[in-house]
Image (cartoon, rainbow, N blue to C red; front, side, top):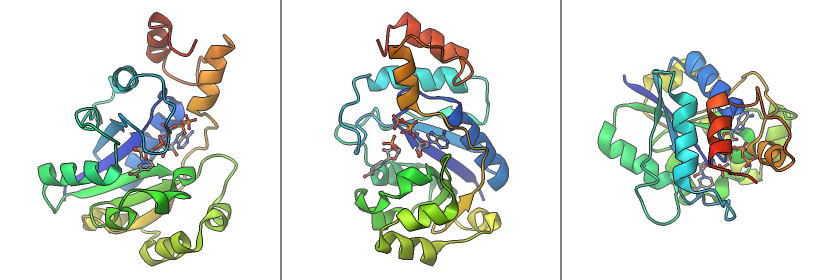
Length: 216
Ligand SMILES: Nc1ncnc2c1ncn2[C@@H]1O[C@H](COP(=O)(O)OP(=O)(O)OP(=O)(O)O)[C@@H](O)[C@H]1O
Ligand SMILES: O=C(O)c1ccc[n+]([C@@H]2O[C@H](COP(=O)([O-])O)[C@@H](O)[C@H]2O)c1
C-alpha cells in the first residue's frame, strides 16, 4: 500500500523541530513520501503577517536536499480558510481510497482538535500520528484533553505502527521523537531581538529571511 505522511503548518518560519519530527516519524512508520503543506490562511492563527508565498518558499529551501520531502502548495491554490478536511479530500481525489495517509501533529495542536472544521470526518480520510512537544508527556497530553477528545483518542488508538501501514485511515498513534524545544514563535522573537537563530533552522532559511527582511 502506498504510504504518505502529511505535515501541515503555518511554518512561520519552518525550523528543525518540524524537519526532525517529520524525519523520525517517516522512519518509525516506514513512510516514503512526506508532504509539507503550508497553510495559506491557518484556521486558528489570524495574525500571520508573513505571506503564504514567503512561508512556502522557506519550506521549499528547507526540504530541497531530501528526496522524500515534498512541498505541497494545494492550500495556496485555494481561497478562504485552509481547512485540513478540504486538503484531505483533495489528496484522496488524487491518490484514491487505498493509499495510507498519516497526518503528523504535535500534541499541542491535538488538544484543540475538536474545534477543527468537520473534525469527526478527518479520521475517515487519514491516520493521525501525534508527537509530544517538549515539556509534555503522554499522561499530561491526555489530561489536557477535553473529555470528548480523550474518548476519541481512546477509541481510535493503536500503539502498533503496522496498523497504519495496513489500512488507509482511521487510527491514532502517539510516537516518541527527539524533543527539540524549538518554536516559530521563539524564532520570530529572536529575529526581532537580532539574536542568533543558527542551528535552530537551516542556514538557507536564515539567509532567505535576511534577504527579504522578514520578522523585523
Ligand atoms: N519542535 C517541534 N517538535 C514537534 N512538533 C512540532 C515542533 N514545532 C512544531 N511542531 C508541530 O508542527 C506542526 C506545525 O507547527 P507550526 O508551523 O504551527 O509551528 P510552531 O513552531 O508551533 O509555530 P508557532 O510558534 O508560531 O505557534 C504542528 O502540528 C506543531 O505541533
Ligand atoms: O481544519 C481546521 O479546522 C484546522 C484548525 C487548526 C489547525 N489546522 C491545521 O493544523 C496544522 C497546524 O496548524 P498550526 O496553526 O499549528 O500551524 C495546519 O495545517 C493547519 O491548517 C486545521
